[in-house]
Amino acid sequence: MNRYILNRLRERMLDRGSMCNMPEKTLQESFILNTWGTNAIEGNILTLEEVTKVVETGMTVSNRSIRDLMETIQHLSVLAEVVSGRIREINMKSSLDLHNMIFRGILMDAGQWRMVNVRITGSRYPPPRVEKIISLLQEWEQHYLAMEMKREDVLSQAAEMHFGFESIHPFSDGNGRVGRLLLNIHFLNHNWPLVHILPHDRNSYLDVLETAHFNGVAKLTEFLETNMASSLIFVLDKVGSEEDKLMTLNEVGEVSGVDYSSKYMALRIKQGELPGIRLNNRWKTSPAAIRLYKEIKGRE
Image 1 (cartoon, one colour):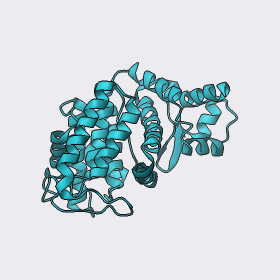
Image 2 (cartoon, rainbow, N blue to C red; image 1 turned 120 degrees about the horizontal axis):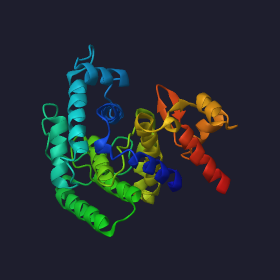
Image 3 (cartoon, one colour; image 1 turned 180 degrees about the vertical axis):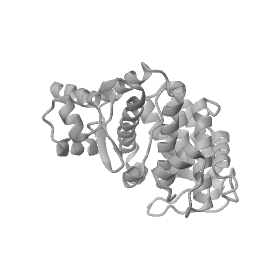
Image 4 (cartoon, one colour; image 1 turned 135 degrees about the vertical axis):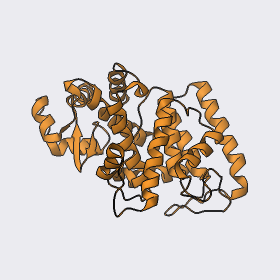
């Protein structure tokens, strides 16, 4: 995603306030989308509609496991703590606290580092042996602090921090969800919104994490840029102007007065060039995103 587009979208959001100061309805919808996405890519089978029902009505969902429901409710609660600013640190202690808060009553070792060696399904990279976990986490924590002191690029820093945590794989289960919460703490601390990683992103997400073991975090950074653009237009749809309204690709083509076909726009979204988000199996974007994309194309 072109950084000019990303930064202009962020400026539009910050004109309305930081993420923690967004209207309650906007926060709730962001929490629902984020929780559904982060759990679904780990095998939780609650649908977006079911997660919405749990949040909005407080009712449980029939024919769903207690674990799936508990993961949903507890992740939503933790996310609220994160966005409120009550959990702001990225370190070993916060990692343990997050794990305990999400998985208490679900995992026997909630809030504890793993005591066994593990493998990551589909990965060629074996996580470090259990006796190395603490020293590697200490290095990870110090490396992040050093990046913060140097004020390194926020997106690149996010990729470096997230990959470092996931490669250590310090828990027996739940590494992805804790790692993605740490990712969002980082973004919120730097006045970016929550980044959503949704079920259709799963294969790309795992691929860029795997690639980082051998070729560095450039691809992971690109992935986060693209998903951050999606997250920005999702928030702006709730709090922005008419130009920020999310529309289907056919609708936005008519409103924007562009001659881009819906097929062309879908391709550019998938390539990470045009901000877009897939909701209810339909790609959507906004007139503001189209305008920014046109500006970039015009310069080229």
